[in-house]
Image 1: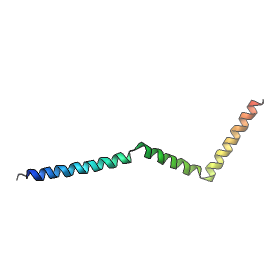
Image 2: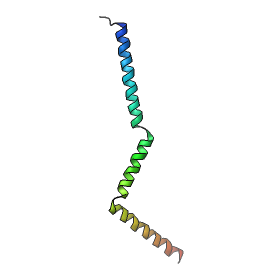
Image 3: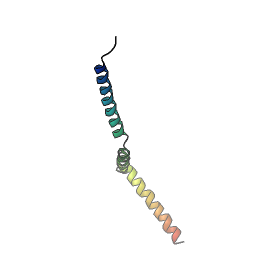
Image 4: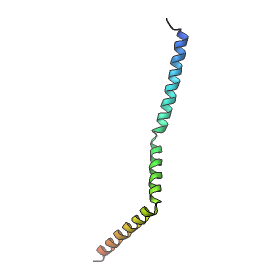
Amino acid sequence: MARDPDAIERDIEQAREALATTLDQLSEKAHPQRFVDAGKASVQEKLNDPRVRYALIGVGALVAIVVVRKLFR
């Protein structure tokens, strides 16, 4: 049984709208700034951990001592 051309047009328009909505959602999820923000938040969260913070301070102090010793030898 043949379909009504108006019904076909409505179906096509609904499919277009659904596709446009999906593309908008995908472009929002794939936005580069979102990845940058997520990376920054992850790094800040790790640096707020006292174990990581104190380990980095220790490594920095050790590197500073080695550099000063090399300069004054």
